[in-house]
Image (tube, rainbow, N blue to C red; front, side):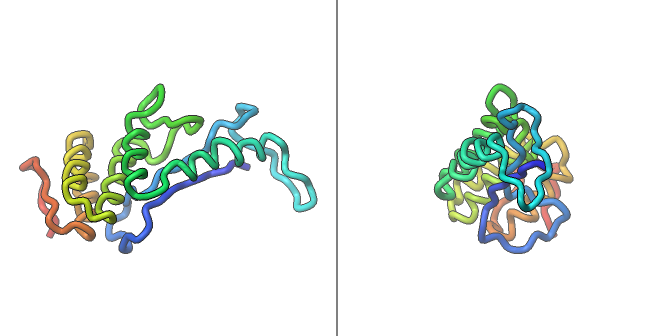
Amino acid sequence: MQLLIGVAVAGLPAPVTAIRHDSVGGTADTASGTGSYPLLTRDQPLPPDLLADVSGPLMEFLLKAEDLEDFVVWAQDIYLGHEHPGWWGRFRPVLPQGTGPLEAAAFAAAVARDTRLVEFLAARVENEQASEHYFDDFLIELRQLHPSIRPRHPMVRPAT
């Protein structure tokens, strides 16, 4: 079995596109380095490496951001990566990859009602996202929270 962990931005409306990146998560490298644990029966004790991982890197991941502002900073740190883009601590990779952490940061900034930060993060996503279709979907979702956001690039079509 594997421990999959995620941290999501709360308070968002229901998604309207197929994919919305409003969370970060993944599976940490385990103390044993295997990335997985044996499947246990109900009467078996938890293995020490599983307990060490839950009390170590998994708790660190869960507790890293205390509020939306911390989440925005942390998600950008994940995007830049530790040793490699999209890596953070023992989470190699953090999902979603690509601009996903920046998109999650933009949603957090929108929930916090920080207009300038939303605009900055949307511009970063626009600059870094290779697919205009993914960027269009991101804008559609972001406009649910921040209707005035507009693309800077003329090739990106406004949502209708």
